[in-house]
Image 1: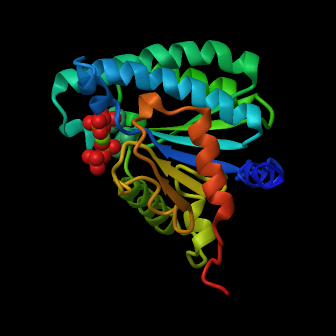
Image 2: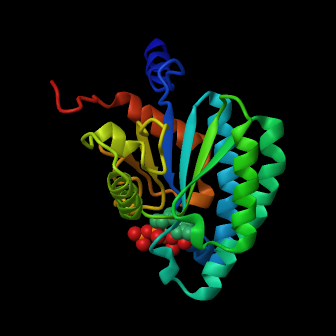
Length: 246
Ligand code: IPE
Ligand code: IPE
Ligand code: MG
């Protein structure tokens, strides 16, 4: 009995040693819907609900940052009906999130090239930025929309080239380059989780994940929840992070 108790205790998340920043590739919506004989878009709607639940949990346990991959630069290859459905859901959820973020003190930021999104999404993003600007330091969610890790790096390189052209002096280093990325000012994620069973990065946070601990799980994103976050944190807490040292 005593032994059993001890084992169980060892499996609990250490709340005093949480990552500051978790990043998630929200994958598996389509397969979740297919398994239930529903259209893929129903999976995206369920996935949006999961996002809400998971973000609230991350805030409640005291994380500082959550970054989620919502739409990649490659996702435009999907049928136009599916892309339109995803964009519609984003408009709906962003509209609702804006109402709540001020009340709940949740900062919302966007990573990715948002310039090509619909006028409605652009104005929602603008509105969000204005609210976020006057919110104090609290929990921050970064939503990656039309985001690609390579695209982000190329856009940062272009910004640097512009500065040099404008006469800026001094050498480029990692710190300066980081400050030109969408994630400027946000610490790198210590933990990167991919639900949905695939074991790849799919162009997510190429620069920022250099030393992230990766956790892959078969759970499809709409089925994901607080228990899965805890399981991933537990796994993270068992890792020996060496950063190239000994
Ligand atoms: C992730 O779920 C959501 C987006 C990429 C927008 P998927 O739509 O990729 O679902 P699966 O991987 O096909 O099951
Ligand atoms: C990654 O999932 C992108 C998002 C979750 C937004 P995908 O389903 O697009 O990735 P692949 O095609 O399996 O690599
Ligand atoms: Mg997928």
